[in-house]
Image 1 (cartoon, rainbow, N blue to C red):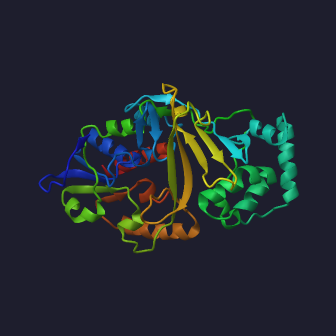
Image 2: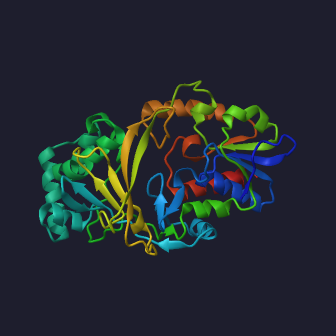
Length: 377
């Protein structure tokens, strides 16, 4: 990674990439491997976007929330392992509902904790009993959708509070599409993901991004849109990963997001919750989850202190970071208008979560980068 201090109007690049998140950095690496001259422009003072990590007291801190890499795609798994060794990690969060603890995702451990059932037949019968009691045939919103699939107990203790905090709306006001299905596992299996490959980089995600950007020039603390005229002159093609509505100066209206606020604390105790992720599913707490960073890393040698982060969902405004696109009908219609505007431009390509107005897991972001570079170069 070659940090440069200012725009050099005498340099010329094949590609200018706006944003050093996992999508932008993957694009940069793929293009560099093809022999292209690339400049990455990053608005923040650090690389990596939301996967940025930093190390404090031997603890790798996920600054913008926990990121667990998971994929079924062997090519993508091999790609990320080029840049740091992926250490095996199985995500097995716990749901805390008013002090009651339940395993996630919904599996036989969860059903035993809810109802004391021990067999698949008993669990299915209990779910069916509660679903029939609700009597919902044509669900009109998220609340009715979950009740029609899982019944009252699962909805009340494990879905309602968490979802309402996350989206800032009543479940009665949310479309059922937010939860398209409820993944019931009728087995004793607490692995949150089904993917073949699951892990966390040994040295944190920042190391992965640093290695992806090896021998690639990067300009930090630089807002592309404020320097657009000057930057566009020094590159043949642009890959833009920022908010698509901001790029077009909100010409078709502002796209909506949910944001997050992080409260990170260092505590002088060996452990706070003895696990990496605990979700809080009632309205008793304003936060949706607590992350204890040291438990993502089995090699962490710190036995005297710990670092936790409480995640608070927040409304989005321009001064905050957009995290979750609100892909309801209104926003999707607005995005389609921006997509049409983007397709009319030559030599500029939009990608990533903000450029495509779609939430991506990390492997999907990398796959989208593969597809884009293959299609344009």
